[in-house]
Amino acid sequence: MSGSISQQNITQGTPWSGPAPTPAYSGAASTGIFIPEIWSGKLIEKFYAATVLAAIANTDYEGEIRNQGDKVKIRTKPTIAISDYTLDMDLVIQRPSSNSVELQIAYAKYFNLALDDINELQSDLNLLSMWSDDAAEQLKIVIDTQVLTLLDAGTAAANKGSNAGAISANIDLGATGAPAVLTPNTVLNYIVDLGTCLDEYNIPETNRWLVIPPWVAGMIMKSDLRNASISGDGISLLRNGRLGMIDRFTLYASNLLPTAAEGSATATRIFAGHPHGLTFASQISKVETLRSERSFSTLLRGLQVYGAQVLDGIALCELYAVRG
Image 1 (spheres, rainbow, N blue to C red):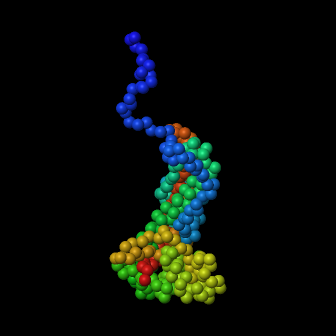
Image 2: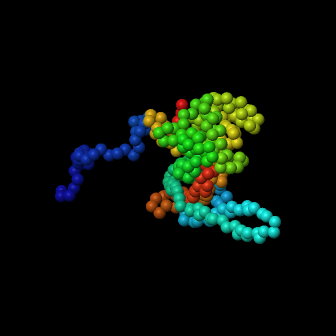
């Protein structure tokens, strides 16, 4: 009968000549062996590079910025002239005026993350909160790395190089092609030299800082600086792996210092100074969650704006060094 389907066709069917269909589930279960997956409610700890900008920079102006493109006018102290006086002379009137420095909030970094609804339902972790915490740490690392690279160009010429010292001009702090060579026996000498450079510019002794790479921190831990009397604060430098003070410097270790190739070695730019030398202002201007228009997911995004500027290069010193 025209248009009918024979019993033979129903039973045997027509052979399939196309590609094999994809099973709804692939893996061990498709072979007949079911292996259940258990998601732990605990996370593997993540470790972040130490950030130091909040400790070494002047951050007094952070509350005055809101958006990228903002400008902060920073007033400087005037220099008062001192004159000789003789009896019955007319006094010369001085009208102090101060220059202003403009801090441009020129940089911005963002993150934009999506959490699919299915993943959110299947997770017993607060993923958005966890991601937000990680994003904050990653922002600090990126910003620290960028700002630390600005210090080389901003450091006064008399506070770096092989002829450093505003008065002495005979302090060798290393230079491109001839870096200083640090060993456990010489590291203290170079730290003292950095302090001398600041002294020759009359930089205050209080609040001085020194940022060193971990390999220099290791040298200090192996040197005679383990003796508490050298630190000047009566407390041993071996404080659960954290360094204290040496020659009026508070020490901070960071993996984010700029480096350069010196033959087969790697030289690190080690910076010392006073917060007066560097200003830094940063603000997370936006953190928001919203529904995605293109997928079944929640978006988490944030925007951080910031600016950094060397205010006074004489309050910064640079040691260009390799491991000896």
